[in-house]
Amino acid sequence: MIRINLSLTRDTIYLDPAMARPLSRPIPDPTKPGDQSVWDYPRPPRLERVAEPLRVVLGGAVIAQTKAGYRVLETAHPPTYYFPPADVMAGVLTGPRRGGICEWKGQAVLFDVHGGDRLAPSAAWSYPEPTSGFDAIAGYVAFYALPMDACFVGDAQVTPQPGTFYGGWITPGIVGPFKGGPGTMGW
Image 1 (cartoon, rainbow, N blue to C red):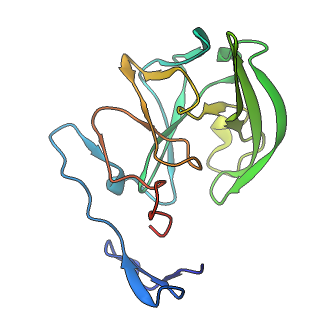
Image 2: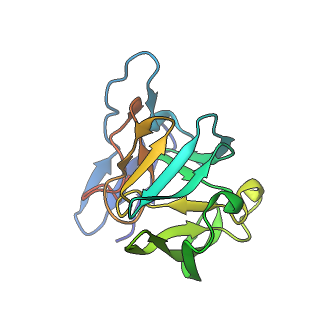
Protein backbone atom coordinates (compact mmCIF):
# COMPACT_ATOMS: atom_id res chain seq x y z
CA MET A 1 0.00 0.00 0.00
CA ILE A 2 1.49 3.34 -1.02
CA ARG A 3 0.64 6.55 0.79
CA ILE A 4 1.48 9.92 -0.64
CA ASN A 5 1.83 12.92 1.63
CA LEU A 6 -0.28 15.65 0.04
CA SER A 7 0.23 18.31 2.69
CA LEU A 8 2.75 19.30 5.34
CA THR A 9 0.23 20.92 7.66
CA ARG A 10 -1.07 19.56 10.96
CA ASP A 11 -4.00 18.14 8.95
CA THR A 12 -1.81 15.99 6.69
CA ILE A 13 -3.85 13.75 4.40
CA TYR A 14 -2.64 10.51 2.87
CA LEU A 15 -4.02 8.90 -0.26
CA ASP A 16 -4.55 5.17 -0.09
CA PRO A 17 -4.87 3.98 -3.72
CA ALA A 18 -6.24 0.59 -2.66
CA MET A 19 -9.17 2.24 -0.90
CA ALA A 20 -9.51 5.13 -3.42
CA ARG A 21 -10.31 7.58 -0.64
CA PRO A 22 -8.27 9.98 1.47
CA LEU A 23 -7.26 9.09 5.00
CA SER A 24 -6.80 11.81 7.57
CA ARG A 25 -4.80 11.93 10.72
CA PRO A 26 -6.78 11.23 13.90
CA ILE A 27 -7.99 13.90 16.25
CA PRO A 28 -5.70 14.03 19.32
CA ASP A 29 -7.26 12.95 22.60
CA PRO A 30 -7.98 15.80 25.04
CA THR A 31 -5.21 16.65 27.49
CA LYS A 32 -5.22 17.92 31.06
CA PRO A 33 -2.58 20.24 32.57
CA GLY A 34 0.71 18.33 32.79
CA ASP A 35 -0.22 15.78 30.09
CA GLN A 36 1.89 15.24 26.98
CA SER A 37 0.11 14.57 23.70
CA VAL A 38 2.04 12.31 21.34
CA TRP A 39 0.66 14.54 18.58
CA ASP A 40 2.87 17.35 19.91
CA TYR A 41 6.00 15.19 19.66
CA PRO A 42 8.29 16.02 16.73
CA ARG A 43 8.94 14.28 13.44
CA PRO A 44 11.81 13.61 12.91
CA PRO A 45 11.97 12.29 16.48
CA ARG A 46 13.87 13.87 19.37
CA LEU A 47 16.21 12.10 21.79
CA GLU A 48 16.26 13.29 25.40
CA ARG A 49 17.61 12.17 28.77
CA VAL A 50 15.16 10.70 31.27
CA ALA A 51 15.04 12.09 34.81
CA GLU A 52 13.04 9.18 36.29
CA PRO A 53 14.53 5.76 37.03
CA LEU A 54 13.63 2.99 34.57
CA ARG A 55 13.13 -0.69 35.43
CA VAL A 56 12.23 -3.91 33.58
CA VAL A 57 11.07 -7.14 35.27
CA LEU A 58 10.90 -10.56 33.57
CA GLY A 59 10.37 -13.94 35.24
CA GLY A 60 10.12 -12.20 38.60
CA ALA A 61 13.66 -10.78 38.25
CA VAL A 62 14.75 -7.18 37.69
CA ILE A 63 16.69 -7.54 34.43
CA ALA A 64 17.41 -3.87 33.71
CA GLN A 65 17.45 -0.80 35.91
CA THR A 66 18.90 2.65 35.28
CA LYS A 67 18.92 6.28 36.29
CA ALA A 68 20.78 7.16 33.09
CA GLY A 69 18.22 6.34 30.40
CA TYR A 70 17.10 8.13 27.28
CA ARG A 71 13.76 8.35 25.56
CA VAL A 72 12.85 8.96 21.94
CA LEU A 73 9.80 11.13 21.25
CA GLU A 74 8.11 10.83 17.85
CA THR A 75 4.75 12.02 16.55
CA ALA A 76 1.92 9.52 17.24
CA HIS A 77 4.13 7.24 19.40
CA PRO A 78 4.44 6.92 23.15
CA PRO A 79 8.08 7.36 24.24
CA THR A 80 10.56 4.56 23.65
CA TYR A 81 13.07 4.13 26.50
CA TYR A 82 16.73 3.12 26.15
CA PHE A 83 18.96 1.63 28.86
CA PRO A 84 22.78 1.86 28.98
CA PRO A 85 24.16 -1.64 28.34
CA ALA A 86 25.95 -1.59 31.72
CA ASP A 87 22.53 -1.29 33.42
CA VAL A 88 21.16 -4.46 31.80
CA MET A 89 21.96 -7.52 33.93
CA ALA A 90 24.68 -9.80 32.56
CA GLY A 91 23.43 -12.86 30.66
CA VAL A 92 19.93 -11.46 30.12
CA LEU A 93 20.31 -10.81 26.38
CA THR A 94 21.12 -13.39 23.73
CA GLY A 95 21.76 -12.54 20.12
CA PRO A 96 22.13 -10.15 18.51
CA ARG A 97 20.59 -10.77 15.13
CA ARG A 98 19.63 -8.35 12.43
CA GLY A 99 16.43 -6.41 13.09
CA GLY A 100 14.57 -3.78 11.13
CA ILE A 101 15.72 -0.44 9.83
CA CYS A 102 14.40 2.77 11.35
CA GLU A 103 14.32 5.68 8.93
CA TRP A 104 15.62 7.92 11.74
CA LYS A 105 17.92 5.75 13.88
CA GLY A 106 19.31 3.25 11.37
CA GLN A 107 19.83 -0.53 11.47
CA ALA A 108 18.62 -2.27 14.62
CA VAL A 109 19.64 -5.58 16.13
CA LEU A 110 17.24 -7.81 18.10
CA PHE A 111 17.83 -9.79 21.28
CA ASP A 112 16.03 -12.59 23.06
CA VAL A 113 15.51 -11.66 26.71
CA HIS A 114 15.92 -14.08 29.65
CA GLY A 115 14.64 -13.42 33.16
CA GLY A 116 14.00 -15.91 35.96
CA ASP A 117 12.45 -18.95 34.27
CA ARG A 118 11.12 -16.96 31.29
CA LEU A 119 12.33 -16.36 27.75
CA ALA A 120 10.93 -13.51 25.65
CA PRO A 121 12.04 -13.96 22.01
CA SER A 122 12.99 -10.82 20.05
CA ALA A 123 11.85 -8.66 22.97
CA ALA A 124 14.70 -6.11 23.02
CA TRP A 125 16.60 -4.13 20.42
CA SER A 126 19.53 -1.80 20.03
CA TYR A 127 21.21 0.44 17.45
CA PRO A 128 24.95 -0.42 17.47
CA GLU A 129 25.74 2.36 14.98
CA PRO A 130 22.82 4.80 15.00
CA THR A 131 22.50 7.66 12.57
CA SER A 132 23.66 11.17 13.40
CA GLY A 133 21.59 12.74 16.15
CA PHE A 134 21.11 9.42 17.95
CA ASP A 135 24.79 8.72 18.70
CA ALA A 136 24.13 8.95 22.45
CA ILE A 137 22.11 5.69 22.37
CA ALA A 138 24.68 3.62 20.45
CA GLY A 139 24.54 0.17 22.03
CA TYR A 140 21.75 1.15 24.44
CA VAL A 141 18.94 -1.39 24.83
CA ALA A 142 15.17 -0.88 24.50
CA PHE A 143 12.59 -3.44 25.64
CA TYR A 144 9.13 -4.26 24.34
CA ALA A 145 6.84 -3.92 27.37
CA LEU A 146 4.24 -6.51 26.31
CA PRO A 147 6.33 -9.70 26.86
CA MET A 148 7.80 -8.43 30.15
CA ASP A 149 6.23 -8.99 33.58
CA ALA A 150 6.36 -5.23 34.11
CA CYS A 151 8.21 -2.10 33.02
CA PHE A 152 8.38 1.09 35.06
CA VAL A 153 9.13 4.77 34.55
CA GLY A 154 9.64 6.03 38.08
CA ASP A 155 6.91 4.31 40.10
CA ALA A 156 4.46 4.17 37.18
CA GLN A 157 3.95 0.77 35.57
CA VAL A 158 3.76 1.20 31.79
CA THR A 159 1.16 -0.01 29.34
CA PRO A 160 2.61 -1.36 26.06
CA GLN A 161 2.08 0.58 22.84
CA PRO A 162 -0.72 -1.09 20.83
CA GLY A 163 0.30 -3.68 18.24
CA THR A 164 3.47 -5.74 18.04
CA PHE A 165 5.72 -3.62 15.81
CA TYR A 166 6.49 -0.53 17.90
CA GLY A 167 7.92 -0.56 21.41
CA GLY A 168 6.65 2.59 23.10
CA TRP A 169 5.79 2.72 26.80
CA ILE A 170 2.56 4.46 27.83
CA THR A 171 2.56 6.05 31.29
CA PRO A 172 -0.04 8.23 33.01
CA GLY A 173 -0.07 11.65 31.38
CA ILE A 174 0.94 10.41 27.91
CA VAL A 175 -2.09 10.95 25.68
CA GLY A 176 -2.88 9.47 22.23
CA PRO A 177 -4.35 8.09 20.18
CA PHE A 178 -1.26 5.95 19.56
CA LYS A 179 0.05 4.50 16.33
CA GLY A 180 0.50 0.72 16.27
CA GLY A 181 -2.94 -0.80 16.57
CA PRO A 182 -5.18 -1.96 13.72
CA GLY A 183 -5.96 0.79 11.20
CA THR A 184 -3.19 3.15 12.35
CA MET A 185 -0.33 2.36 9.98
CA GLY A 186 -1.29 5.21 7.61
CA TRP A 187 -0.85 7.91 10.24
